[in-house]
Image (cartoon, rainbow, N blue to C red; front, side, top):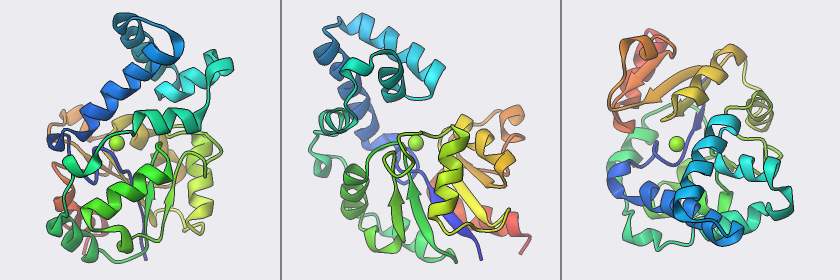
Length: 217
Ligand SMILES: [Mg+2]
């Protein structure tokens, strides 16, 4: 029986909603406000931190621990009227309902945000639980420790049974050596990148097809 670990932002809903760009703008704004930076410097710092640590928050935790408060960070960056961006998605619901096995949200965000998103999409009841950044001891994807903790929380599925679905290639390539099967949600994927994961789908609705291909059914 497969065990699904599904990313949230950019995976269960797309960039077309405008939500991720809005969150991204709030992240830059957070660095401006909390660190007293110009927009240009904040953007450059974000790029460097994402490159070096995987996420902006990890950069903050490592390089500015004096100013790093994950709860404050998430409260600020997710302070958006989510209902203006997201609506119930019956097609997503049918997609998830058609897949066998327990499903978890596995996100570098916090469970409060993830819970609000799932409720607005109308799929909250389809998930066994939310594995957020606090659940993985503030270790984000693509850190090995985050995947190991997530596997433990998801009941230690045998190698090959855990399927990670994510829109970020680096999150998938890091998980694959740990026994995850990997599905990349990407509108465009170079062939050289596509070979680094087990399946590529243009949008989440194609997940059942990818599952059939993965399992050879
Ligand atoms: Mg994502």
